[in-house]
Image 1 (cartoon, one colour):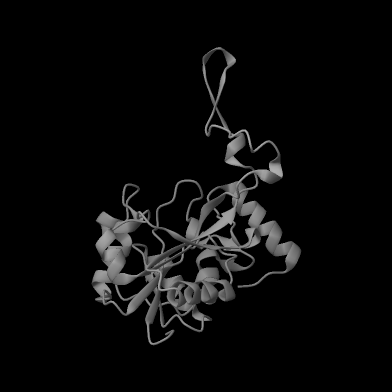
Image 2 (cartoon, one colour):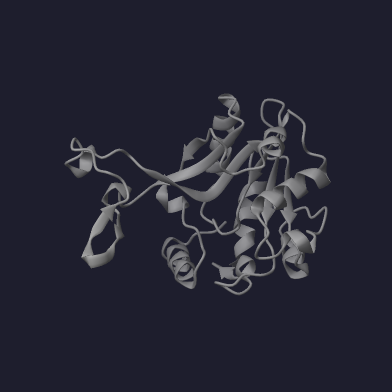
Length: 235
């Protein structure tokens, strides 16, 4: 709880995954991938409950072993490739009756194992202190989108953004960021109203790039394992 506001952490983890089979429970530094998010969320000063939304018995069993609550099993219609994260969150909020104006949730994707407890707590403080009803985490892009082009016929390139003549040097380009998927923080009643991860007004919390790694492919997983081994990291 923070400033008398109840906060839950929601960890979505369905059983099916194409890029990496059983992705949410693959080994990372001797722990199932999902355990990294559970352990760090449970260490939070402000998160009152850490909740799993899953359709998979093995994932549920592992999550419970690391102290995650599993108050319901996700229905099949919200666990397919076509199911949206919006539906998953709304289902969880409904099952938990967690929709008052004095309740917030933090969505924690298991595929972002390096987001720290300190970052989670600072982002919660940021959102509530400034009375922002919706905040996402971002990280700076390595390459500016002002240098990205679309391939056209006859070897022509069309810039994605029309370059302003004043941006002639790299250091003069606007700072650009990308959503890293590590944190979504929202007032529960607000999210139920907008039913979107891209509302008209989006506030952001900037994270360090080293915390922003998202494991989506086998190459991502190998890179994450190298980082863990090199730095002797633990959840």
